[in-house]
Length: 252
Image (cartoon, rainbow, N blue to C red; front, side):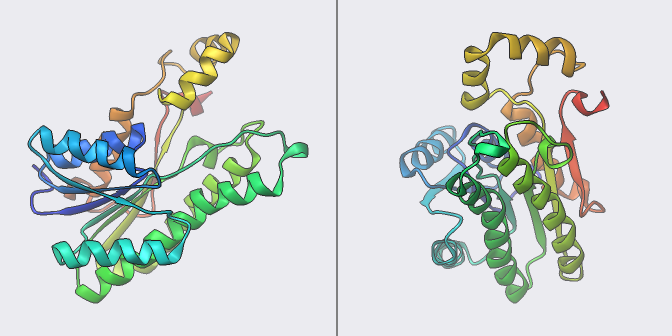
């Protein structure tokens, strides 16, 4: 119960990794605020937690819109008087070759994956500092923020940006008692990755046999465990770090 009486905000909380993270925090005593652009998914995840005996509620917001992020932070402060933990998990990954990547693809990906992390972190951190609340921010980077991958130029750029943003705000928020870290997952079993595998069995074989020493994809719950670790006092002397969760993929 590392998060008893803590308020944890999880963006992208309606997706597999976000939902698993919200469940993890709630099981360890936190009140989980599940934020998603899709209200139905957010409410479904919150209902799962409350049915299991945890504390959670849902909020619809576009993390790339400052006014909506401000409204989100205000709603949490009004209801709970504080925010202890922010998990920036919302993200998209529309594929396209570099020469064919449109402005729309680039802008949408950077808006959600990088601008959204900047806005949510800044808005929430301002309130944490104003209230004197020490806490933790955990961002969603990726192995694609450490090495490139063909066909995902916008996604790669956004995740490299998250790694740099994490380091920078970790430096600036450390004097306020706010730690800032990131997780960098490799291939995790989600609806998106499963669809890719089903569409291209040869790609699945390549990943399993040639790219991942552990010969499997990660599970959302394994990413959630790493997020919870970085947000907890077990990681009290860790800040500015990106924790890779990839089954050994980057060792190749």
